Length: 187
Image 1 (spheres, rainbow, N blue to C red):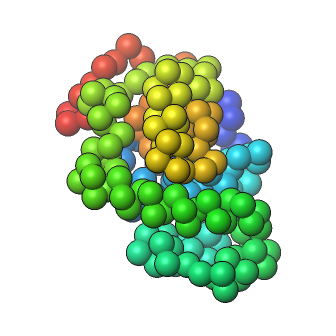
Image 2: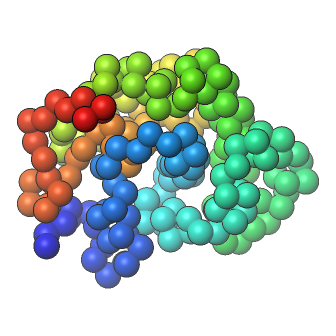
Image 3: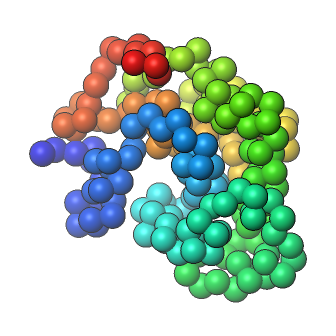
């Protein structure tokens, strides 16, 4: 089976991620939250680096329990900054806590983060390749930043939308490639 060129076939975690997660629509707020936090840590790094540390992030971030993360204090920040198994970037760590609070507020406003994202997509999946941002990612990034989120620029949000299946970008030679579809999320 051919896969997208970016998928490192020598890394079983990357192959599994490509085959079972990337580009598949996921409506679960817990998953959407986890991916938003991980994507924000990717800024300036490769996704493979983040993916290889994912299990350590899960452990360090209490399995991405939003309630716990929203109340992380300075001691927890120090602990995360000292954890050599994750990305120890203090501004990203602080942003993850801030973003958790905003994520929770968005859920309260829209009923779910999926509903929030769908309000921009009108219930459609976008099928496109060879892009790193588009008008949709620009718009969502602008809105998230107006709400106070950090490390959520258009390129990060585009990668997030690809990861969570709102944008399907499997390459033409990939066995998961689909094109010219405007499927409703409800299908």
